[in-house]
Image 1: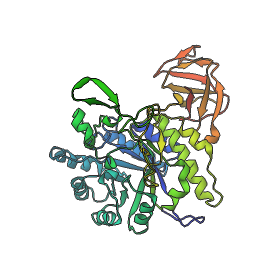
Image 2: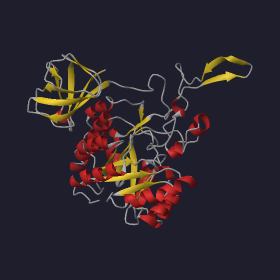
Image 3: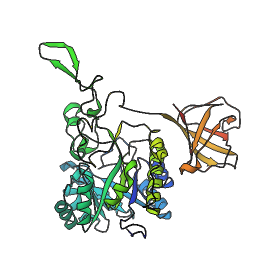
Image 4: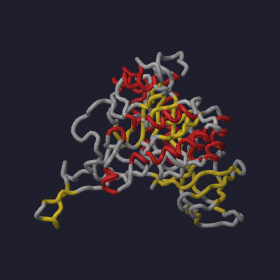
Length: 413
């Protein structure tokens, strides 16, 4: 990664999540330098749509045409029965010029080196890399980039990065797991769904109560304040207010979590970090945090925000979200512009019901492109006036300003 003229720290690559092809395109359109996606097997988000090999090929061509990168997740902790399927999958993947595979399991890493030695390897955060010696060990095993454990402080990250001969990456935004770097056994125990094989039931998000042995019909909330608590559910990570501190850690890449999240989430979060990152590296000394960035991140569905472990232990209950802050959603995602018919008319793919004569906000790829208007002329594919548009329908609307494909419609919930 090239050094900038304005700071001694390298400008990090912004890596965004993509659960399917459209989310991948959205991530790139809204400012990501790279997108990470899962194939149909061997990744930790089996609940996402994920991509077929043909879709990975087409997505790779699309991304490379725009000078961006694509990383394929293969980050399960494989069982014996997985191994027979990994080798033929890699052979097929070798025909596609993807930019890296993300792995956790040493067995998968060894298989990648045997089958596709020309494909760079990124080590998943699931591998729990917490010190510089570990980072060096993995580099010697052929790993190009280590995605560091989420439990590290900025000081520890900086020390590892300063002394590393390889690349480093950190998560800067998204859901956190209460288990060590996501290596959870709770889901396996409670729901027979294996988090380390991509089928987590999110047992940590459930609300728990206390029972006394001889009073089985009486339950007691586990109180930590006047409203109780979710004892296992972590706050979401949000580092948008700490861009300079992140930059000084010197990592190669910043990653956004969310392959299970919506197309709207990918767009809204990616564009905010893109703008903040660019503004800082354009003028580090004159950089000022823009409150609009945090306001925008509040408009996507999320849990209570926190800074994870970047600043160490912030005190009692600093990691756990509270009741009432379990899932915060201020705006409703209505649809995405799928085609621009003229400067005044756009086609919208409806994601949630849209009512005519409704005030909406049209969200651009950059914050400066946003504007509000009322949908006064809603028409179906036969150019007939309609009052309501339903999920999956394509409708035409008049727009008060020129728009582009992938612009989105939302309204205050």
